[in-house]
Image 1 (tube, protein in one colour):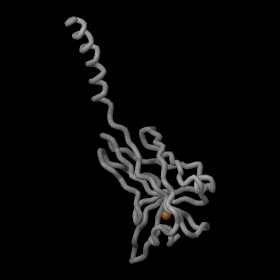
Image 2 (image 1 turned 180 degrees about the vertical axis):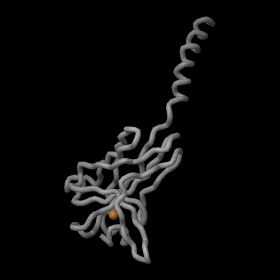
Image 3 (image 1 turned 180 degrees about the horizontal axis):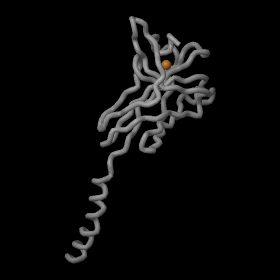
Image 4 (image 1 turned 135 degrees about the vertical axis):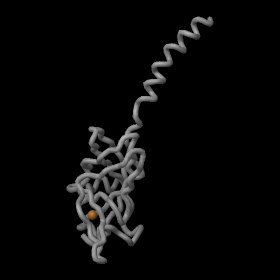
Length: 153
Ligand SMILES: [Cu+2]
């Protein structure tokens, strides 16, 4: 009996060590889309991107549910609010970068009507280490909040 127990414990140990060495992966959550009340104008999507133990760079975002997508950053220059396109986004090790109203956001043109009806969209985030992370965003109805990022587009 005793010998059998020891053998099992010895077998379990390498597994536990492997678990410690695996770095926590990058993940994305908290997604939502703010619909522009003007259907001709772009809408914005927001997320939280969490890095693991290593710094990581977001290289791009894709969705099949919009005609066009860009990653933007809101900037205020000489008192004028505007936006610029960003290609890469660095997420420092063990930290979170929030895409939020007034800051970085994903701009969406012509969201698929089926996605609008379903009330959610799916995005794929592509990272510098080759990871592809799929994250959903709930679509918020236009007019929930008068403040919007795309008013200056
Ligand atoms: Cu924008």
